[in-house]
Length: 245
Length: 233
Image (tube, rainbow over all chains, first blue to last red; front, side):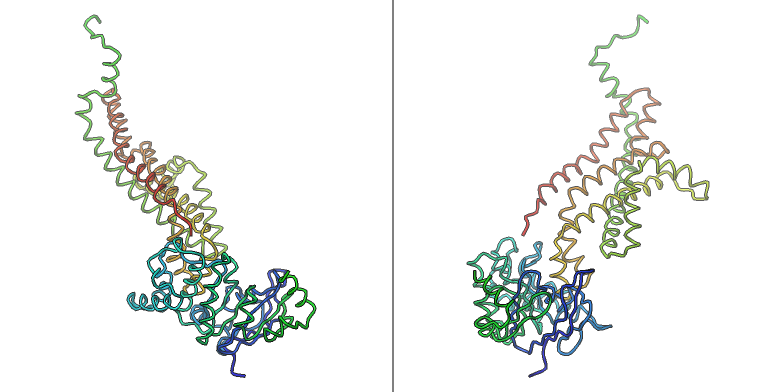
């Protein structure tokens, strides 16, 4: 196996007395899409948020291209540029138009001149099919379009890894497809992706590996057809039967 | 006093409040007062709002000791009547070797009081911005100060403008308190002229001067309230 792009090693996270993650070990090789499922409260979002230190791990290491982002003396803002994050609730900046939503970090973090930042923003918006919405404000476009802009905002920084935290959970069903299509393109372009989601159909078709989490540990992992088709673990079976109703 | 002219009630009213002779004599004094009030008002609004904004930003950093100090400052300054502080500083501080002029005392006290209210208003605005905005900005590599400055404050300030404008007007009007320590602002000039002339017309002039000064701001505040009825994403 190639050196993993993203490696989670011995990750523990507790909020006070409340242990959320109890020793996660996970390697995501370059270009792989790892799909994370699990019941509410299983720690999947917390694991994802530890990967760019929106949550500080209690102990353990998060390595991006071999560098521990939790290490002493690490420039966290520089590391975060390598890790794009897409949120359930989009979190676009409501006071900025679509173009500025994408270009803000290019101008203020990468210090690009406005013209260059705008050009790169338009290229990123083009990737998600929304270049023609550049002058709109977030409140003027649909939820699905907002989420695609959020993806473009992360992509514009040319990250090494993309984290998706339930990217379609807040969307009306008819808008989910467009977001998944963008994610599919992204996977095809070779992006390394860690996706927390309930879109099992998407997982079957696009994921290299599926991980089932419960109680802050990885209970089962394997190829999508193995985990969905013949889950070995009892808890995985119970979860999948509940999800499928 | 059979020579005394009997005035009708209307004549008496006009003679008391709008006496042309008194107005003609004292309007330059009121104008002087208007300029002093205007200068104080601008200084107080600029200082108070900037200090309040700085304190709210400092509070957002989340240093425990600093936050306790800021909250204490804001609560004490919002509780004390400004007149008490003005008298305390103007008459008390010279005894510990700090002598401030009347206008300086009014400026310092009202600026601090406005800063206390402004800090609370800005803080409320900052905390009303969704946590996801912070997370999204930080996840793109923006630092704390950049996130505050480019993402959070622009949203927070929109929410805070109407209450801030109202509070700034309320506190700036208190420059009239300077009259008790001899600051030559509008009310001081008006009451002085009223004593000399034995006529209330200078007070009418003073009231008109306050209207000329503050009515535009009140209208502006009203406009801000409608202008920034912010549509949420």
